Length: 319
Image 1 (cartoon, rainbow, N blue to C red):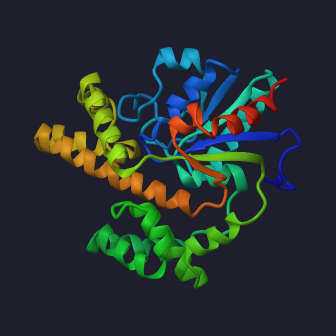
Image 2 (cartoon, one colour):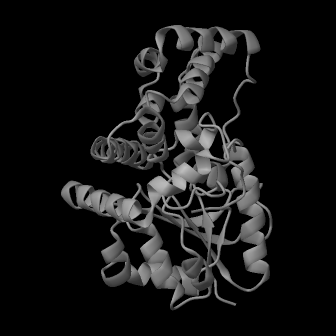
């Protein structure tokens, strides 16, 4: 767990709670907040959007009063954030939390953002406008899934972590391969073996398949009961459905329900399916990430064998 030589002097130690969606990360963080002066640095690519609350499982106002969260509600739905910008904001938040004598804990499942924070970004060639335009034209003509299949042939690592409709990341993967002759996933894996910018302890939370499926379904039921459809309806009155945030799992399906007449039962089924697919991609990413020190469950972290290591790590950072 050696720190990267270029890390800022105040980097210190960093606890990270990663894991696929609905694996219990927030619950662990809230339980820790009852015992320790911690604050959360979020690593969630949907919670950064203002107004996208229910469908992103964003902590409620009461939960944020109990446990302050950073790097959430920082973007409008039409904006985007790359991994480098996330890492910059997260570093500032970490420094601020420490300056106030509290302990930062990174919580989230957006793998590339976590890697950018812990190890920096792999050096890649700059975008080639002509090549990108050609790939985007192919995508428009053939559809993103067709280019995703091509990406899977040359770069299975990235393809496994990218949704077949994620044009931006599919095009970037193919672009890097054509520019360098090497898969982006391979370049990222080599970079991930380098020294960390922070001395960290990273837990990847997970659940057995059946239990995770139940957790996903229970959370979806809670989101719909809490007014997910009404939230999306109100957002659509303020922003075009082409806004980037509406492409997120859950929001995309509810937009189709409101705009295209997809039934609510079918919408529920599609969200469940998309969430399971997204969780598999997150799990695949984390399994390949050498930054992960331990794989555990929320129960084991709070009540089992891993609890002592977790608490010892936090206590070592207390003023």
